[in-house]
Amino acid sequence: MSRKISRELAMKLFYQLEITKDYSREKLENFIEENVHENFDKDYMLSVGIKFIENKDKIDSLINKYSKGWNLDRIAKVDLSIIRLAIVELLYREDIPFKVSINEAVELAKRYADEDSPSFINGVLGSVLNEIQK
Image (cartoon, rainbow, N blue to C red; front, side, top):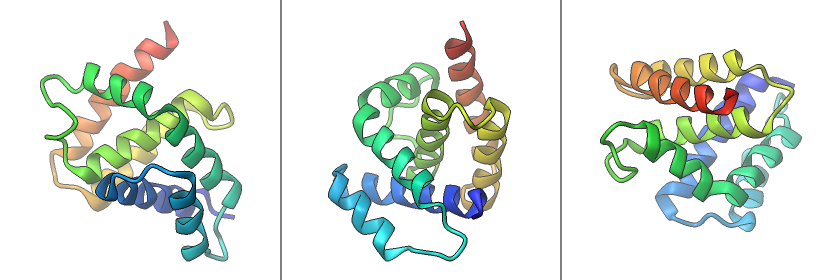
């Protein structure tokens, strides 16, 4: 099972949740059903999806705190989805090293976002990590 593929799908899930403003468990389960893949880690998808839905306010408050003048409405939806996923991993996935979560977020940004996004995402996540490690 490929974590890279599952992480990419999770980012797309978070994007879809944001676009529809439907942060329900049903939406999560429907997305997983529609996107089954042979190298797909369903447990990872469920884990990060549920943790995001349960902790969205906490995650978003961290983003607001460290996005330096960019409120959530101004952040590109793809960037926001990548940041949210990485924060879920940083906070709730002890099996994933912090550096891996941040590096994978930057790689997703290089692939899906604009040219300024990787450094913006890295900066926000670095600040979040500093707070977590205090």
